[in-house]
Amino acid sequence: MSELLNELSEQMSEERLTDEDILGMFEESGALLLGHFVLTSGKHSDRYFEKFNVLNKPWFVEKICQELALRLAEYQPDVVLGPTTLGVLLAYETAKFLGIPAAYGEKGPEGKRFLRRPEHIQPGQKVAVVDDVLTTGGSVRECIDLVKECGATLCAVGVLVDRAGGTVTFPAPLVSTLSLKVEAFDPDDVPSWLEAIPITRPGSTGKK
Image 1 (tube, one colour):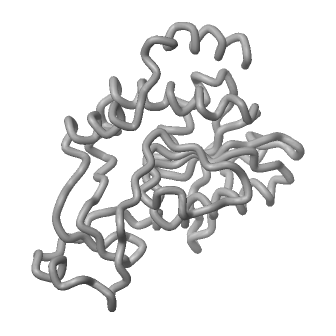
Image 2 (tube, rainbow, N blue to C red; image 1 turned 90 degrees about the vertical axis):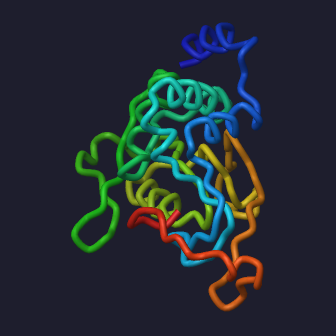
């Protein structure tokens, strides 16, 4: 892994991505939306990251996952684990640049995550969990539970966007390519200026 990453780091030494670069990709792709949104966590916010609008553009995905791989490298993961659906794409791309295998946490009939191919994470291995946009960390925690069930060790969590601005913590270091403190309000604590904006309910079935 180190040889591949050293080569990648040398190639990207003049092209390391900043928060502004990542934010620019979200804005250019129409993935950063403004309005009144009810998030999948149930909280209300005036900004929403529509990750599908950026993750359907391979040229952006490649650059972002290269940067995420470089930021995760110091934790020396043996496997990268991502939750279905979009986490699969991120796990694959990040693992590719790290030169290690990827594994995918799928949802079972009762909503519990599982490895369809459990041999992809071995006991004692170090696992980095990756996901797209972090708000409350629900999907990440489900994958962390899966790592424990496999007898492996969580070495880091990597996300594209940490919209909690570092306020959500895990039992391993959190790495993000973009960190923003985007305020989210409980349903009974929505400010009047936000209530005046019509509600949009975007998102998917999984909590982030």
